[in-house]
Image (tube, rainbow, N blue to C red):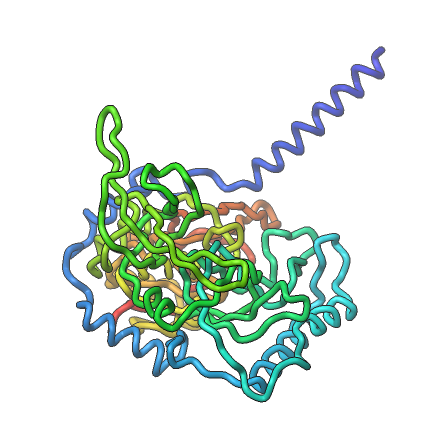
Length: 454
């Protein structure tokens, strides 16, 4: 009997220890040196010296986007996009070579071997690429992951690390215009180029459209301003179709009354959405979005706008490369700035090339110098790049710099070891987060300070 009691106690203790360890590895809801007030847009708006000053006019934003596209070549003008079969073959082979050398793992925990990459190369159907590519205009009809290889099998840097599929390049919302360049051997995948990213998407997520239909979505003026906006197929807002995320664009017409409730009316905006016929061509139908979720035209580029849009995403889950329909650090910034009509590149390594330098640092730059630069920088129109990460600067409080960012985790020194604290969401933190760990604090890792303006 005593042995049974002892065994039960040990089992209970081990369960409690396991649970405690999980709790310990989870970051607190309120991160170190933050307060509950810091989790609202109003707190940061009140501290900004000129929240309603226009940063760039629509004409200046157009010129800014042109610079990103034409000079920096970090985004694509799809109407002018050109490539060749030779360039595609070189690109596919480079990707295969790069990924095969990385020692990545499959979902079952085994290393990806040559057979996996041979399978990928076969499905890429390189031999079918003609001398000249015949690009087709396309529209995304349902949310689509955009992958480096035409497969639903993931590749992971560490065994079991399934939230970080290394094949995930980006993700595309309903209504995203794309150029269709190639089809996989099994016919299940299309290789497409969007304004900001390239990769393979499931063929049933794309509808081939005419040049006129394509133009309608390229120039769409219905801008999503909420973290996620539901699309319905009926004016009563019941027949659900899909959702689109902040910054997505859809053709928009008029605002109509959706329903009469006991207390108030619900109004919705009539939009155009693409669907797919059985032959793969597009058909455009009416969709309906709650009026508060979409704006006709871009919002004004002011600090107030950027702060409000950033905090619309507060506590939204982290999604590597857009996995699960969420956002990583660069997608977070992209969604925010898209609401004012600024089209940032997809990846943080490219986003750090955009805008005006306030300062550039190296690993030997003392923290005091970085703090001095941040003390003079305006929050909410300033981004903070570092290797593998990027954040939106909010400002200083009690000589501590703060940012809002989509972040997976940080390291905390406990004794002689580093412990990973998982955040897994959009959060406000100070830049001393991670201080004392082997990786260093966010401030120590900061590589530059850039203003999203000329």
